[in-house]
Amino acid sequence: MEQKSLNSEHILIVRCGEVALKGTNKPYFERMLLDRIKKLLKKFDGVQAYRHEGLIFVRADKELNPDLKPIIREVGKVFGVASISPAMESESNMEAIGRTAVEYMLRAIEERGVKTFKVEAKRADKNVPVKSPDISRQIGAAVLKGCKVLKVDVHDPDCRLFVDVRHDLSYIYQDKIPGYGGLPLGTNGKGMTLLSGGIDSPVATWMMAKRGMLIEAVHFHSYPYTSQRAQEKVEELASLVATYCGRFKMHVINLLPIQEQIVQNCPEEETTILVRRFMMRIAERLAKDTGCDMLITGENLGQVASQTAEALVVTDASVQMPVMRPLIGMDKVDIMDLAQEIGTYEKSIEPYEDCCTVFLPKHPATKPKLDRILHSESKLDCETLIEAAVASEEIIEIRPA
Image (tube, rainbow, N blue to C red; front, top):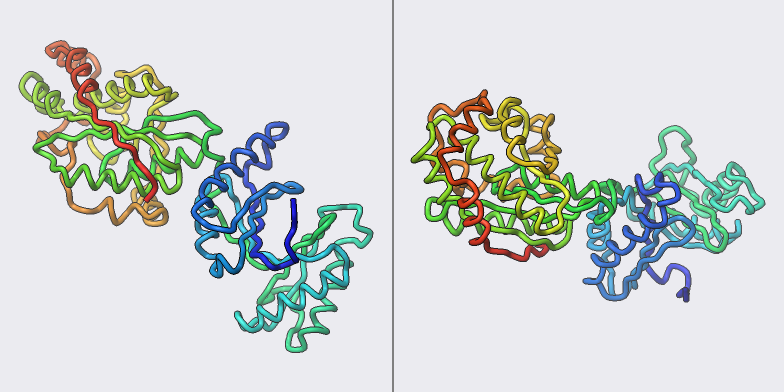
């Protein structure tokens, strides 16, 4: 690859998380990760990403990209990225590394008010004749000579100056900005997520995408009991999730005809669980048609009547496809905190109606029995209702916000 003059570009060192543990499959995961990074960085001019010596590097033209923060934010959204370090580049000899380290620390003094430092060096290339402790001592001495105001503090320094010595070029940096980790998108199948306008399902979707799963979504509404604005809210939520997991399709289903049949023919206390079973069946039908391997829900054990242990057992009995519930054992506060972190919380709490609140029984069954539920469903033409719902679907292309 053709190199520009050293440090004429912004340089980011991007480290993999679990990807590094994948053994003989590691190159495949790294390629998937790099492809995802390249895709997100297409919006920037003068930026390139590539793999080299076990790391991923991002280079950005300083004139076209004077502020590196937007690029760091985009790379940080990529699942599989463990950490990011803005770095300076040097030739791999002690004199050149020392000069670059002095330049780096002079900037740190000016921008961050650094007064103490510690050098931590490592040799990625073991053919380098100078051992890591000696590199640390030599570079530390060069910094002390070039930056008179600095002192060494090996216990609690203002700046830990990392020196990564490699075969051709070496890198100097201070920060290790954490990423979300996980696995690159597309390395772990595809799931159909039941996406509502609440707090939980967007977070559950995000968590499964973090494990490398591609996403397709289904959203249920009960128009005209639920408004067009309520659906638009869900589309906006989906776009926020898509900033992490990429564009996907959302299948929109009107559940009202099914709900009306349930209310007319079945016991009131069973309404919630019966509606939930229909939602799962429809989601499974769509999942099979779109190549999904499993269903994803935002259910959390004991949170509402339809999420008791007994209710979840009855719900699962309606489908054959595996159901992933990544939030199942989390506290609600932790789910809310994660929603705030990924940027979906404020949109989720906007007060628009949801199909699950339509025809909500006063006393929903919390310990439903499967035989009773099956008896109630025998009063309905389930297959016809499901086919009609699927036939009337609207498909919306969700793009990142």
